[in-house]
Length: 136
Image 1 (cartoon, rainbow, N blue to C red):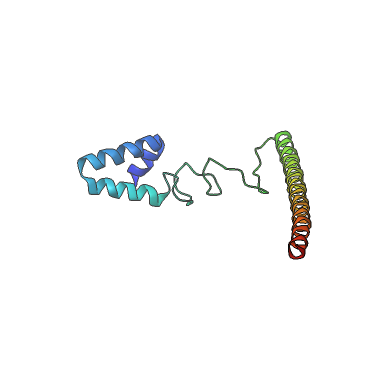
Image 2: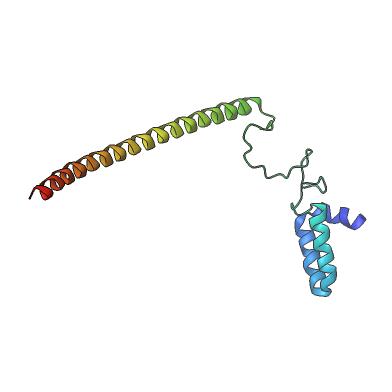
């Protein structure tokens, strides 16, 4: 595995180059190299803690937003700012969802009131026409 350690020092471009050259020379070797890269996690396809492209906890360097779980950046002032900003954004999101719910309820109520008014007019005019027809 001395070769793997040496390629790890050069990074992903070295592994990709090896894989491409292997495919050109003899495709089963290229397929084996690709399988090894995926299995070992060197290309970021798995969460195993192999290679230098993974953090101490086994996660990749590219961290997405994970609600409720924030890693420390090492700067306490920034961490406080980030936590405060995320809390405020979550509060604004909750307020916005509440506003949307109220807006939907108001729209539904207006549509229902319109329906009832139309129904009342139809039943009133149908009642007048129904009573006039048998008498005539």
